[in-house]
Image (cartoon, rainbow over all chains, first blue to last red; front, side, top):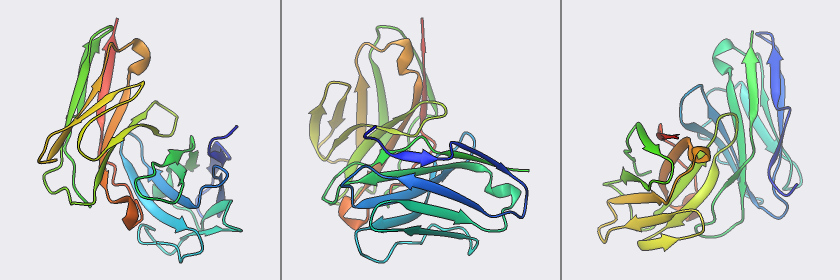
Length: 114
Length: 111
């Protein structure tokens, strides 16, 4: 498995609970991205990590959303006090550093808030 | 980030060539054009990327005119398994490569 791995693949939780979503990027990829995709929609950018630089958090919809990347590899997206509108597929992608390097996506975590 | 416009859906038949045109009138000098394919319950999969003229790989061809205000993804001899959503994206990788995905083009290949 050399691709981007995300876990869990599905997550069902109650409104108000916190959730953590995990992304294992492709080995050697320095850039990591999180996106959100609502049913039948395109992808919405959330956050971007590149090497040791400060992450670009400009896409996070509220302060209930946060993400970290430990050791320049694995990343965790955390949603606190989940709301029903948070229900979506959360996709992670990674890429090599360098001009025009394409992003490689995992298959996402389908999050359902009851 | 450059805005893209592409058809919402297209129907085709097995064995035909499918051409999807994407408009990006405000493309910037440093922007690349990238196409992704997405099947249900899967993440987008990179198909092809180009800057100008024509790019071809084992899956598709990408045609970009000199003014770069549009691009056309060409899928030769499609099969039923090519039924998917195809996204056209324009962006500057050196600017953080935050890709803006529009609604994509839903391609349905019929037998």
